[in-house]
Length: 332
Ligand SMILES: NC(=O)c1ccc[n+]([C@@H]2O[C@H](COP(=O)([O-])OP(=O)(O)OC[C@H]3O[C@@H](n4cnc5c(N)ncnc54)[C@H](OP(=O)(O)O)[C@@H]3O)[C@@H](O)[C@H]2O)c1
Image 1 (cartoon, rainbow, N blue to C red):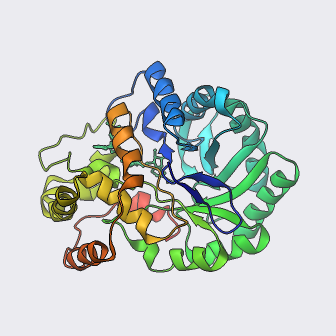
Image 2: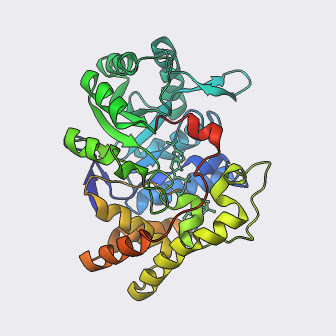
């Protein structure tokens, strides 16, 4: 697998990483733990060196899973995790609000280190910007953790360009992780330019549009309201899915010509945007992991990229990418 550098001075990682979030739930079922450990290890065998988790996934269970799976490979891989959601540590339940007070960050880091079974967290993202804590204080807390040897690199998620700049002035950022794909292009407005200027790597999350861009979801797909976050997302309503099918049709038409899949074109399109972009598609299935990794070998020509651009510009994607409450918790 090709390697990419996360920003100007950042570490080198596989061009495509693996998002591990859904391995402990969130998208319908909760997969078998042993199978997920085996899947993560197969990803390493296939050349993936960049793994994404967070304290809130599970909560805690995802870090435990990723830590156990990658224990034999610690010196070969980069594990990214995130702080910033308030969690009841006894109940292991989210409290539904963010928290990035410096003393909290300095406390919860030890839990992440322990669950991951590592001495240092390779990349530590603030998961959501906390409107009640100046970003300089957050960056200062992470700077202290870096000086203490508990963290190697600092990242932010769903942060706006201005916040990124302020944080970076206190502690240089290695990566920004925001949602980005052909059906959510907000990073193009400001954040990508800020990353380029400051030499920060960019990690698109939900690069397959939470599965939609692979062409395996249709207006009749049922999302279980009890355990599938997509049941709460406006653009996954049957009407929106029907309308947004135009995006998948576009990917499918290019894919057919190139002997690829729509999901691979979605990932190849992201890779083609900038050499310091590293998407982290998530899957719980080996054949899909292989398909997604295969996208690193799909090159889109200048003409193909222009064709995608022209066609995409005529499609008005319908429905929010989050419900209103979740969107408000972003910094955008
Ligand atoms: N920073 C943040 O706030 C944030 C938010 C969301 C996610 N993330 C990170 O980003 C990672 C990826 O995002 P995501 O999981 O939301 O979305 P995604 O990677 O865009 O899509 C994942 C979905 O697509 C399906 N899928 C994957 N590969 C496929 C293929 N080749 N063909 C058909 N379906 C396929 C998966 O189902 P199967 O599992 O059944 O294959 C899953 O339902 C997460 O694991 C997490 O680490 C971060």
